[in-house]
Amino acid sequence: MNRNALSKTVGATTVVAIAGVCVLAATLFRGGLHTTIPITVISDRAGLVMNPDAKVKLHGVAVGRVTGIDSLPNGQAALHLALEPSAVDQIPANVNVDIASSTVFGSKLVQLVPPAEPSGQRLRADQVLTADHVTVEINTVFEQLTRVLAKIDPAKLSQTLGAIAGALDGRGAQFGVALSGLHQALGEIEPSLGNLSHDIEAAAAVTDAYADAAPDLMKTVNNVVALAHTVVDTRHDLDAFLIASTGLADVGNQVVGDNGQGIIDVAHLLVPTTDLLARYHDQLGCTLGALNDFAHVPPALTPGVPVLVGFELGTERYRYPQDLPKVAAKNGPTCDQLRLPHVPPETSVPYVIADIGTNRYRYGNQGILLNSDGLKQYLFGPIDGPPRNTTQIGQPG
Image (cartoon, rainbow, N blue to C red; front, side, top):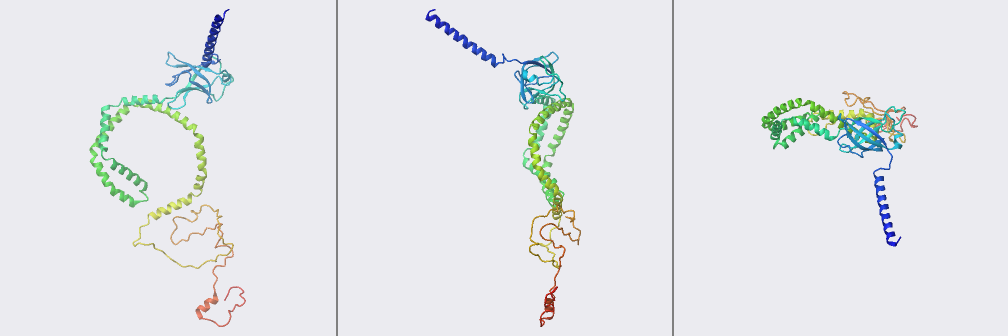
């Protein structure tokens, strides 16, 4: 063989080898040499975003893919699955199937759900399963809503919206002030009678605005009645819309479920605060009750603060170190024992003994100590000679 023929043979062999490598890579990429277990799933519908090559998951782990989707004569859908042989050995034969979605607008996937009581048999090739649930897409909800809106008379709806726009045109600021005043009145009507009187005076301008808009408001009411009759006539479509919304709510439950641990952690962080508020709820009630009583006290006739002063006998003087102050009281709430905040007239509030470093009612308190010698000198003037009790045995004097 001459050199020219040898070069042609080597070149042809190289081209064939390169083509074989490309075909082998493409075949491996498409899973042509990968062995899978075929499974068929029958469902009422496949969903709007169910496509071939969609994932098949078990416990959130991909165990296969969707190889094809066929429409059956009875309106159902047949999904052909290709599962990994290693995963099929772990899946019971009575496994449940859901066609779910990762998000509201996301693509569909086949979710394998283990049953509460798995059977002893395992999933086998060419087995037919039935889908239990298909997630409702947001497109379906919009379709049901479109049906409801299609039953409403556009002319009446336009007339209603026009009447509402005419009633509110140019009065947005006044309407906002009215809503703000109403919210404040409802929140303060019981403890703030003075503020209520002020709100009633300010409501005059608002009622004038409503009086000017009364004809348009009456037209709006009449149009709302016609709209209500239309809604009653289309109640079946409305029921279908609510059912579709239920499916959407299931997706929302899944979203909330994914964040359930975070919500639980926040609740646990609030436990110490709520326990403290529960322990001292009596004091909080007393404080709010006292503020309520203070708000209802009529103003003084003359400016100033009235003070009622009285004199009473003193108590035992402080002694060191037993009367040094400290923070160690653990007696807890005392609002009920003191009958606060409504103390009857001419009633002394009981003294609460706590571990605060001093107790004027402690055992051995001698009470008032009289200086009898000083009293005699104050009454009779200076007296010659030493006090009668020169040795200071007992009390002086």
